[in-house]
Image (cartoon, rainbow, N blue to C red; front, side, top):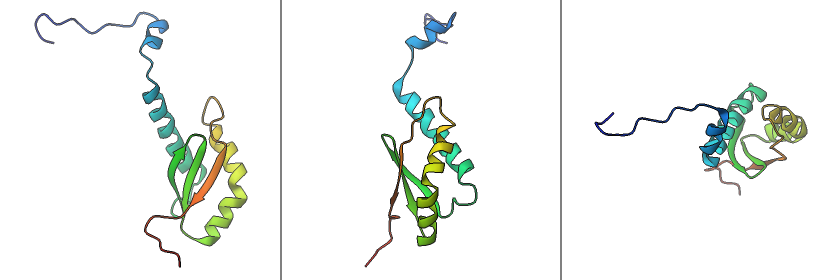
Length: 106
């Protein structure tokens, strides 16, 4: 600490923590939890199902094989329920499938 600088404020109660609440850090934390939850819920399927993006309450998933696509379509509702268990409020409403980047379909 530099000479004459004010020392960092220590928190004395939980109300002071809420004053420093940052919406961006909350979103980043939620994405980190989603990444962890996705790996646990889709154990073994990670090489076929890649979490690509999140748009509002929709997860976008890249699928490499048509068989894996069909399985994801069949398990979609179950996956949503399992993923939402990791959050205090249900967050995910839909899972959509997107084409992997770099794949050309004729």
